[in-house]
Length: 62
Length: 181
Image (cartoon, rainbow over all chains, first blue to last red; front, side):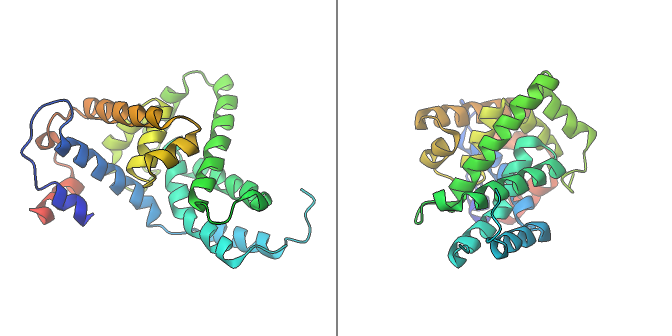
């Protein structure tokens, strides 16, 4: 996030195709949105699932 | 045969990003979590086909993506225009993601063709290289690059941004800008 903020200091924009600044800003929003979910960590349902499957490796009918 | 501890840890640590990817693919948290669950079941049932030393995260993303694609095709027969459906499901569930601050951005993202959306997410958010993203999507590196470029251009159009100043008074953006300047 800090790297993105630093990158955005250079906002000497040129309305060309897609300026670096716009790309950087889009990328920053995309990552912020994505990281919101990533920061929720591993829900119990999944850590339990992984641990359960790991313990029950013996019965493999499928 | 019990799973190697390092493998178990690698799977576990890939879960948060896998969820974020799943949510961005299907636009619905509950369905995304089902998708992650099905992915983990498949992956762990086939853990022997994972090659140690290769990228666990990329392997799991590939399974999830393929599973989503086949599901998606199935549903497509039931619901025409699936991309429109994706956008609609976002609108009817504005709080699915917990925060509304990215709503406009999410809605724009949802309007992208699915192949462009996934390429952009994999490269721009999940942190995969173009090569890894190409491996996950089963296409050429050049294809990924052009999808990412088209996705960015289309996103800028949808959000009406031509320069960085055009980004609206979005709280997050403002906060980040304030801290950066």
